[in-house]
Amino acid sequence: MIDLHCHIIPLVDDGAENAEAACEMAAHALRSGVDTIVCTPHCNLRGARPNYRGRDYAKCFSMFRALLKQRGIPLRILPGCELFAHRSNLRQLLDSKRVVTLNHSRYLLVEFSFHASGESMTSSLELIARRGLIPVVAHPERYDCVQHDPSLAVCWFAKGYIIQLNKGSILGLLGEGAYHAGTHLLASGIAHVIASDAHDPRYRTTGFQSLLPVLSRLCSPEYIQLLLETNPDRIIHDRHIPAPEQEF
Image 1 (spheres, one colour):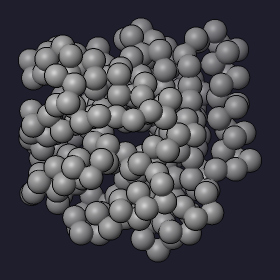
Image 2: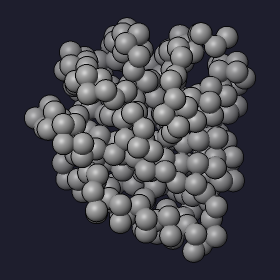
Image 3: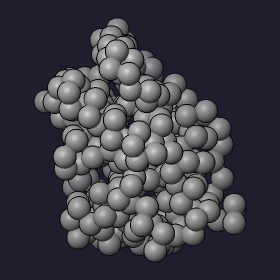
Image 4: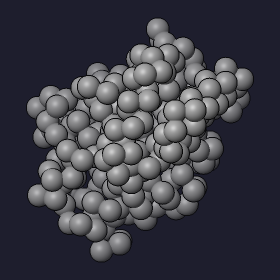
């Protein structure tokens, strides 16, 4: 399985707080059947390191890869980021090509304020798409506007944007609103990917072992494979993703 959204690189954001925590997260992922993680530190988030594409990001990523090799942890890690879409500088970041897409593909993981309006989010997603990138909407089920009006996510889906749900939302660990919105989007067949959005080895963890029994009650085996293996693999290899219903 492939985890497309994970804050595992130590000491760069509010994810792994040190090397030990990061290695514990990596080892747990492997034990649960995840062999590939896209490292997605927060980017453009105020109060955290910028994590823009450049020498500093490359150094942090390379050091973590070397650490895993030194510890004998055979987890494949790939570069990426979770871009916070500040409207004040989003256009500038995109035009200067400073953002780190998912494994250098056309797919860009993007997040918003939980209280952002649906109109402002749609505007930012359209801006990203006009630059030739494919937005991957991080955890739409956690945003107030989607919880109040799930049809927003349906509109994004129809535009070809990728809908990425969080493991914690489906498990009911991120609030009742996120649980209901996430399971609704899943039941509606418009989710493309589920990712861990892991931040630590204790509470927001890597791996999908606890998720699989829950998914098996909500989805077909084919859809589960699409969410955790097939679509993430398409993204990291920069391939087209058909709408889920086109594959059944």
